[in-house]
Length: 228
Image 1 (tube, one colour):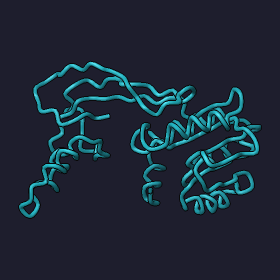
Image 2 (image 1 turned 90 degrees about the horizontal axis):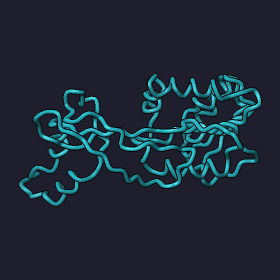
Image 3 (image 1 turned 45 degrees about the vertical axis):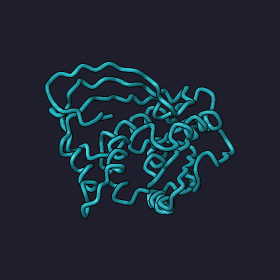
């Protein structure tokens, strides 16, 4: 669950927001019906209205949708945005959308119900020749030497009060983590980043990824994990 500060961080991230704004400006026309899945504070719905959308359906399961309604009203778009508090797979719309915009990735595009939600929306909501934003995501991977991240991960499991926590330690070292990538820089990489797979939302149906890559270690070091 995101808090308001998290939404603010997303709004302030031009690498995240500028491509969305550009894509919406390119795709939206005065006749467009737009569906915004995971609207959160409503920024994509607002942008769609700014660029001329005739109608926007904004879906969000969390209570932040109530604040999004106030923001829409404050900007004069309350009459053009219909907010729906639910998950998109539970929703039925009265018309098809010319543009579907979503930001459901979370930490990674494989996270949670992102891909099933997009596949369902594409099948049930997208008009013929409609546009998905985004259309694709590429996942890149590199082997990394990240001792500080590694030690921070292990610290809670190092003999607390003299107890052996090896069973928990084995699990924590063999599952994915939403780590602090601010601590990882290019000099931590032991391999050049490689494209693991590309997720094409125009055709994707399966949330699982199975792809092989080969990477060459470029320097001496200790491999602590994979950065995706």
